[in-house]
Image (tube, rainbow, N blue to C red; front, top):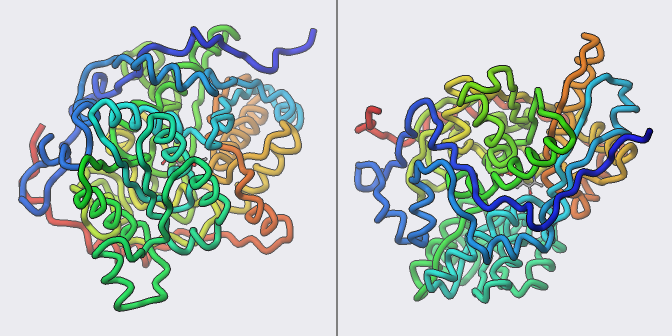
Length: 459
Ligand SMILES: *Cc1c(COP(=O)(O)O)cnc(C)c1O
C-alpha cells in the first residue's frame, strides 16, 4: 500500500477562529513601554498608528478570536494549505521518524506573511483606512501587504531598504504588479529621508530608516495607518491559522507531533505554527511536546540574546518591548535568509522561552543550504532560505531518531518558496557561500545601547 502524500482539507474546514496564546501564558506579558513618556504604552499610544480592532487583539487575553468571513473568503485563494508527508526525505535519510511539513509557500506572495497581511488589510478597511504605509527589507512582507491592500481597495506605500531595492528588483516588481507604490529608502518623500540624503546622498538605507519613513508617512497623511509583518501579538495571532489547520490534518493522518519546528525571524511564523500545539503542552495534555525555533548563527537572539526591554527598530522610534534581543543597533551579517536578520524575538515567543515551554536551536548558513538542496531534490520543492533553517533542524532530529532507533513524528513549517532566492542558491552551488559565526563583540557593543526602562510593571 502506498503512503499518503498530501493531506488536504476542504475550504469549509478553514478554521473559524484564531488561537490567542495570551490566554494560556504562565504569567501575563509585560506591556510595551513608551520611553519618551517614561511609562508603559497605552492602547491610545498604539491607536495613533494602528486601527482599534488590531490594538484590541494586541492586548486581548481571550483564548479564541473569530476570523471575519471576509478574511476567511480571501484565505480561500490558497488555504487550506497542504500538509505533506515528506516520504522522499524520510527515505533519503533512512530514518524511522515520520516527517510532515505544512506548505505555506503556496500563498500568492510565496510565504506565510499573507496570513496576517489579509487580516490587517481587512481591519484597516473596516476602520476607514485609505492608505497603509510599511517598510520592507528583503521584500516578502511588502509583497504580501501589497496584494492584501489591492484586494481590500487600500492604497499601499512601501519603503524598501535601498540596498534590497537595487539587489532584489523582482520583489519590487511583484509589489508594483499588485499596485503598491515602492520607494527606495532613504527617499525624498519624507523629512527623515531628505535629511539622511542631504548628509549622505549614497546612503544604502536600513530597516530603521525605512520604519521612520513609513511612520512619518502615516502621520503626514489623512486616514493613513502603519502595518507590521511580524513580532507583535496580533501578527502571531493571525498566523495560528497554520498550526490550527496542521492539527486538523494530522488528526486525519492519526498523528500528533513529538517535535514542531519553524524558523524564527521576528517570530510570527514560529508562533503560528507552534502555538496551537504549545497550547496542549501549557494545558497539561502534551507535557513532552518539543517546539523548536530555528535561528541563524549570524543572528541568534533566543539562544544568545538577553531578555530585556528593547526597541523594535534600529532607530528607537517604536515603544520598547520586553523580548530576547541582541540590541536594536546590532547589524547581523549579510546572510541570504533576509527574513531572519532581525535583532529581537516576539515578546510572546520570548516569554515562552524564558518559561522553558519552548526551545531554540542555532544553525549555520552552509548546513542550511545543504538541507535546502537535499529537500528540493527529495521533495521537489525549492524552499526559501529562511524555511531551510527549519528543514535543517527537522533533518537533524530525524537522524537523531535513527541513531536512537526510535520512531518520532516531526512537523515543520515550510514558510515560503525560494523562487526569488536563486542568486543565493547560485552562491551556494558555486562554492562561494560563507558561514557566519556568532559575532559576540558586535552584540556586546549593541547591548550597551538598550533603552532605560525604569518603572517595570510587576506582574
Ligand atoms: C519573513 C519570513 C520568515 C521570518 O518570519 P517571522 O514570522 O518574522 O519569524 C520566515 N520565512 C519566510 C519565507 C519569510 O518570508
